Length: 223
Image 1 (cartoon, helix red, strand yellow):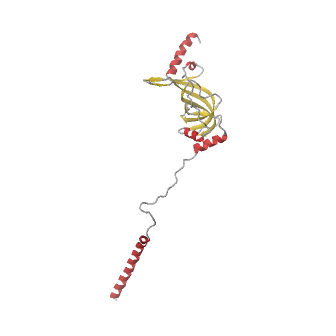
Image 2: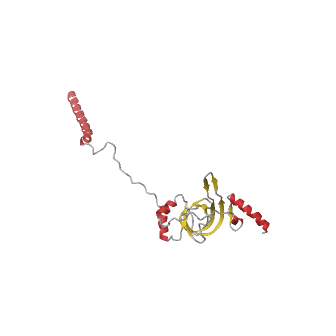
Image 3: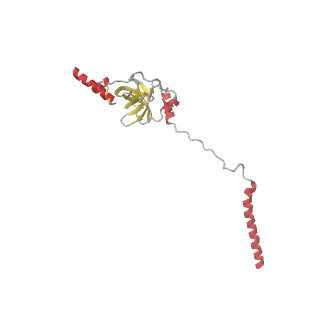
Protein backbone atom coordinates (compact mmCIF):
# COMPACT_ATOMS: atom_id res chain seq x y z
CA UNK A 1 0.00 0.00 0.00
CA UNK A 2 1.42 3.43 -0.91
CA UNK A 3 1.98 6.09 1.76
CA UNK A 4 -0.97 8.07 0.36
CA UNK A 5 -3.28 5.06 0.77
CA UNK A 6 -2.04 4.52 4.31
CA UNK A 7 -2.87 8.12 5.17
CA UNK A 8 -6.35 7.68 3.76
CA UNK A 9 -6.96 4.33 5.47
CA UNK A 10 -6.09 5.46 8.98
CA UNK A 11 -8.74 8.23 9.25
CA UNK A 12 -11.33 5.83 7.86
CA UNK A 13 -10.51 3.25 10.52
CA UNK A 14 -10.64 5.89 13.25
CA UNK A 15 -14.03 7.11 12.06
CA UNK A 16 -15.37 3.56 11.98
CA UNK A 17 -14.09 2.86 15.48
CA UNK A 18 -15.56 6.12 16.78
CA UNK A 19 -18.92 5.11 15.35
CA UNK A 20 -18.77 1.85 17.30
CA UNK A 21 -18.34 -0.42 14.28
CA UNK A 22 -17.14 -3.99 14.71
CA UNK A 23 -13.70 -4.12 13.12
CA UNK A 24 -11.57 -7.19 12.25
CA UNK A 25 -8.07 -7.55 13.62
CA UNK A 26 -5.01 -7.39 11.41
CA UNK A 27 -6.28 -4.67 9.06
CA UNK A 28 -7.22 -1.06 9.59
CA UNK A 29 -8.85 -2.10 12.86
CA UNK A 30 -5.41 -2.31 14.44
CA UNK A 31 -5.27 1.47 14.16
CA UNK A 32 -8.48 1.85 16.19
CA UNK A 33 -7.95 3.69 19.48
CA UNK A 34 -8.14 1.41 22.49
CA UNK A 35 -9.33 2.28 25.96
CA UNK A 36 -6.41 3.26 28.17
CA UNK A 37 -5.41 1.65 31.44
CA UNK A 38 -5.51 -1.88 32.85
CA UNK A 39 -8.52 -4.12 33.33
CA UNK A 40 -10.41 -2.98 36.47
CA UNK A 41 -9.54 -5.03 39.57
CA UNK A 42 -12.06 -7.73 40.35
CA UNK A 43 -13.00 -8.41 36.75
CA UNK A 44 -12.67 -12.12 36.00
CA UNK A 45 -11.52 -12.72 39.58
CA UNK A 46 -14.40 -14.94 40.70
CA UNK A 47 -13.29 -17.87 42.88
CA UNK A 48 -14.59 -20.81 40.84
CA UNK A 49 -14.12 -23.17 43.78
CA UNK A 50 -16.75 -21.21 45.74
CA UNK A 51 -19.89 -22.98 44.53
CA UNK A 52 -22.29 -20.48 46.09
CA UNK A 53 -20.50 -17.52 44.50
CA UNK A 54 -20.52 -19.26 41.13
CA UNK A 55 -24.24 -20.01 41.43
CA UNK A 56 -24.97 -16.37 42.30
CA UNK A 57 -22.89 -15.14 39.36
CA UNK A 58 -24.70 -17.53 37.00
CA UNK A 59 -28.12 -15.98 37.62
CA UNK A 60 -29.58 -14.85 34.30
CA UNK A 61 -27.05 -16.78 32.19
CA UNK A 62 -28.47 -19.28 29.70
CA UNK A 63 -25.14 -21.03 29.10
CA UNK A 64 -22.43 -21.73 31.65
CA UNK A 65 -19.47 -23.64 30.28
CA UNK A 66 -15.73 -24.11 30.35
CA UNK A 67 -14.14 -23.01 27.10
CA UNK A 68 -10.67 -22.60 25.66
CA UNK A 69 -9.89 -19.34 23.86
CA UNK A 70 -8.77 -19.89 20.26
CA UNK A 71 -8.27 -16.26 19.25
CA UNK A 72 -9.57 -12.71 19.46
CA UNK A 73 -11.47 -12.04 16.25
CA UNK A 74 -12.89 -8.54 16.43
CA UNK A 75 -12.96 -5.39 18.50
CA UNK A 76 -15.70 -2.79 18.80
CA UNK A 77 -14.63 0.47 20.44
CA UNK A 78 -17.06 2.72 22.30
CA UNK A 79 -15.43 6.10 23.02
CA UNK A 80 -15.94 7.64 26.42
CA UNK A 81 -18.16 10.66 26.93
CA UNK A 82 -18.42 13.58 29.32
CA UNK A 83 -21.73 15.02 30.49
CA UNK A 84 -21.36 17.87 32.97
CA UNK A 85 -19.23 16.55 35.81
CA UNK A 86 -19.77 12.89 34.86
CA UNK A 87 -17.31 11.09 32.60
CA UNK A 88 -17.95 7.60 31.25
CA UNK A 89 -14.83 5.64 30.29
CA UNK A 90 -14.18 4.22 26.86
CA UNK A 91 -15.14 0.55 26.57
CA UNK A 92 -14.71 -2.25 24.08
CA UNK A 93 -16.71 -5.25 22.90
CA UNK A 94 -14.32 -8.14 22.23
CA UNK A 95 -15.41 -11.04 20.03
CA UNK A 96 -13.57 -14.28 20.80
CA UNK A 97 -13.48 -17.61 19.01
CA UNK A 98 -13.89 -20.17 21.81
CA UNK A 99 -13.80 -23.97 21.83
CA UNK A 100 -16.32 -25.45 24.27
CA UNK A 101 -14.53 -27.82 26.62
CA UNK A 102 -17.11 -28.77 29.28
CA UNK A 103 -20.75 -27.63 29.10
CA UNK A 104 -22.27 -27.03 32.55
CA UNK A 105 -25.73 -25.65 31.76
CA UNK A 106 -27.42 -24.83 28.46
CA UNK A 107 -27.53 -26.50 25.05
CA UNK A 108 -23.87 -26.29 24.03
CA UNK A 109 -21.99 -29.43 23.09
CA UNK A 110 -18.37 -30.23 23.87
CA UNK A 111 -15.79 -29.55 21.12
CA UNK A 112 -18.06 -26.97 19.48
CA UNK A 113 -16.63 -23.64 18.31
CA UNK A 114 -18.67 -20.63 19.42
CA UNK A 115 -18.39 -16.85 19.20
CA UNK A 116 -18.34 -15.18 22.61
CA UNK A 117 -18.51 -11.39 22.82
CA UNK A 118 -17.40 -9.73 26.04
CA UNK A 119 -19.43 -6.54 26.31
CA UNK A 120 -18.28 -3.32 27.95
CA UNK A 121 -14.65 -4.25 28.65
CA UNK A 122 -12.81 -1.37 30.32
CA UNK A 123 -9.08 -0.78 30.05
CA UNK A 124 -6.72 -1.46 27.18
CA UNK A 125 -5.57 -4.97 28.10
CA UNK A 126 -7.00 -8.20 26.76
CA UNK A 127 -8.96 -9.95 29.53
CA UNK A 128 -8.67 -13.41 27.92
CA UNK A 129 -5.51 -15.18 26.82
CA UNK A 130 -5.25 -17.53 23.88
CA UNK A 131 -5.22 -21.27 24.72
CA UNK A 132 -6.34 -20.56 28.31
CA UNK A 133 -9.43 -22.15 29.89
CA UNK A 134 -12.18 -19.96 31.32
CA UNK A 135 -15.54 -20.49 32.94
CA UNK A 136 -18.02 -18.42 30.91
CA UNK A 137 -21.41 -17.06 32.02
CA UNK A 138 -23.15 -16.18 28.77
CA UNK A 139 -26.54 -15.48 27.24
CA UNK A 140 -27.44 -17.02 23.89
CA UNK A 141 -28.35 -14.32 21.36
CA UNK A 142 -28.57 -16.56 18.31
CA UNK A 143 -25.38 -15.94 16.35
CA UNK A 144 -23.21 -15.12 19.37
CA UNK A 145 -22.98 -15.75 23.09
CA UNK A 146 -23.00 -12.49 25.05
CA UNK A 147 -21.10 -12.18 28.33
CA UNK A 148 -20.44 -9.27 30.64
CA UNK A 149 -17.01 -7.74 30.16
CA UNK A 150 -16.23 -7.96 33.87
CA UNK A 151 -18.37 -10.70 35.46
CA UNK A 152 -19.01 -12.90 32.43
CA UNK A 153 -15.86 -14.98 32.77
CA UNK A 154 -13.44 -16.41 35.33
CA UNK A 155 -10.21 -18.35 35.11
CA UNK A 156 -10.83 -22.07 34.70
CA UNK A 157 -7.29 -23.33 35.18
CA UNK A 158 -8.05 -24.58 38.71
CA UNK A 159 -11.27 -26.38 37.78
CA UNK A 160 -11.23 -30.16 38.14
CA UNK A 161 -13.94 -32.75 37.50
CA UNK A 162 -15.13 -32.80 41.11
CA UNK A 163 -15.51 -29.01 41.29
CA UNK A 164 -17.33 -28.93 37.97
CA UNK A 165 -19.75 -31.57 39.21
CA UNK A 166 -20.43 -29.51 42.34
CA UNK A 167 -21.10 -26.44 40.18
CA UNK A 168 -23.40 -28.41 37.87
CA UNK A 169 -25.33 -29.77 40.85
CA UNK A 170 -25.72 -26.30 42.35
CA UNK A 171 -26.93 -24.79 39.06
CA UNK A 172 -29.36 -27.56 38.13
CA UNK A 173 -30.83 -28.33 41.57
CA UNK A 174 -34.58 -27.85 41.90
CA UNK A 175 -35.54 -25.00 44.24
CA UNK A 176 -36.65 -26.18 47.66
CA UNK A 177 -40.38 -25.94 48.37
CA UNK A 178 -41.43 -24.83 51.86
CA UNK A 179 -42.77 -27.59 54.12
CA UNK A 180 -46.53 -27.65 54.63
CA UNK A 181 -47.58 -26.23 58.01
CA UNK A 182 -50.79 -27.43 59.62
CA UNK A 183 -52.64 -24.60 61.30
CA UNK A 184 -55.42 -24.81 63.88
CA UNK A 185 -58.70 -23.11 62.94
CA UNK A 186 -59.44 -19.91 64.79
CA UNK A 187 -61.53 -20.24 67.92
CA UNK A 188 -60.54 -23.86 68.61
CA UNK A 189 -58.20 -23.67 71.54
CA UNK A 190 -58.75 -27.25 72.68
CA UNK A 191 -60.66 -30.47 72.05
CA UNK A 192 -64.43 -30.07 71.64
CA UNK A 193 -66.54 -30.28 74.81
CA UNK A 194 -68.09 -33.72 75.37
CA UNK A 195 -71.50 -32.13 75.94
CA UNK A 196 -71.36 -30.45 72.54
CA UNK A 197 -70.57 -33.73 70.86
CA UNK A 198 -73.28 -35.74 72.71
CA UNK A 199 -76.03 -33.09 72.57
CA UNK A 200 -76.98 -33.42 68.88
CA UNK A 201 -77.25 -37.21 69.12
CA UNK A 202 -79.27 -37.05 72.33
CA UNK A 203 -81.70 -34.60 70.73
CA UNK A 204 -82.29 -36.91 67.78
CA UNK A 205 -82.88 -39.87 70.13
CA UNK A 206 -85.35 -37.84 72.23
CA UNK A 207 -87.33 -36.84 69.14
CA UNK A 208 -87.50 -40.48 68.09
CA UNK A 209 -88.78 -41.61 71.51
CA UNK A 210 -91.43 -38.88 71.62
CA UNK A 211 -92.58 -39.91 68.18
CA UNK A 212 -93.01 -43.52 69.25
CA UNK A 213 -94.97 -42.48 72.36
CA UNK A 214 -97.28 -40.31 70.29
CA UNK A 215 -97.96 -43.07 67.78
CA UNK A 216 -98.65 -45.53 70.62
CA UNK A 217 -101.25 -43.22 72.22
CA UNK A 218 -103.00 -42.56 68.91
CA UNK A 219 -103.23 -46.29 68.33
CA UNK A 220 -104.83 -46.86 71.75
CA UNK A 221 -107.48 -44.21 71.21
CA UNK A 222 -108.45 -45.76 67.91
CA UNK A 223 -108.63 -49.17 69.49
